[in-house]
Image (tube, rainbow, N blue to C red; front, side, top):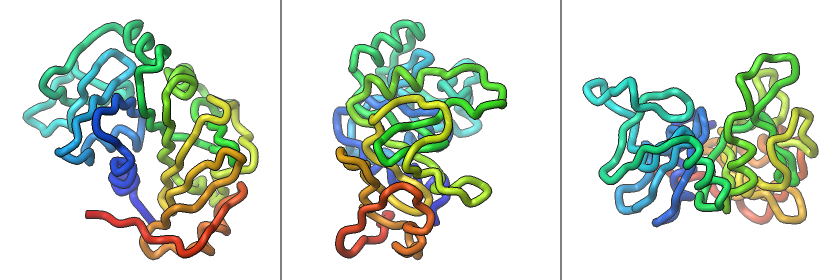
Length: 219
C-alpha cells in the first residue's frame, strides 16, 4: 500500500515534456517534488502563478508565495505572477494539458466528485469544475477506500458531481487504473505487496483485469 508521497511519485511518471500542468489541493501538490530533472514542464496554480517549483526548505519560505491550497511554495526561473482572472482564462481556454486532482469519489464512467459532502460546510467549489471541463487529461490521486473501508471507485458517484466523463486515469494507494471509454476501471499496475484479489474486493465499479498485472516500480 502506497503512502501519499508514493502516490505523487507514481503520478509524476505520467508527466510529459513540455506540458502545462495544474496541481490540485492535497496529494497532487506533492507531485512537484518528483518531476524528473530532464523534463521541462510548467506548473500552474489557479490563484495566479505559472512556474511552481518544489516545496521550500525553511530558509526559502516566503509567506506571500502560496499555491491554491494555501501552502508556501517556490518559483522557478522565468515564473510569472498574475490575477486569478488571467489564470482562469488559461484554464478555460484549454491551455492546461494535464490536471491532477484529488477526489472523494470516481465512477466507472469517469465522473468525479471532489468538492462537497452534503451537510458539511465548504468555502466553495474552487476551480475544479473549470479544470475538469477544460484540461486535455485528468488524473486523480486518491485513497482507494474511505476511512470506514468503503470503495471510492464506484459504479455511480453518490456525492455532488464536479465533472462528467472526464477522468482518464486514477492512482490510488493500491493501484493504477485507466478509465475506459466504454466504462470500467482497467487495472494497469498494483502497489507492492498488494494482490489483484485485494484490489477487486475494494473496487465497487467494474474492474477489468487482463493478463499479469505488474507491481509499480519506484527508482
